[in-house]
Length: 71
Image (cartoon, rainbow, N blue to C red; front, top):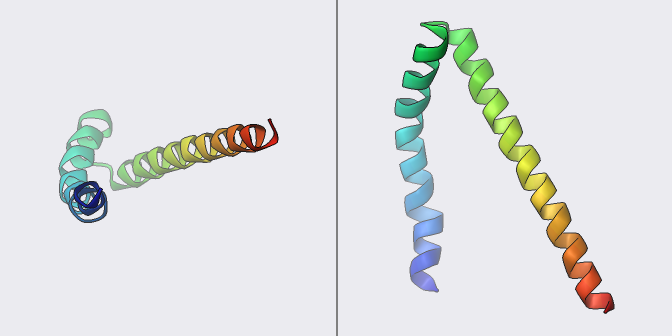
């Protein structure tokens, strides 16, 4: 629907960009203190994990779709 598309493409990324520093700064400060290097490493690790999850989900979805097209 149009409303879901507007939310997914406009509001969600903006909200994530606004809340990300609030969440990650407080979380990394609690875990590692005021280390900027640890903050970047943590956020990089989180991004890598999310990327891996998206890759796995995409591959699984592709296999399911291929199997459905054959059968």
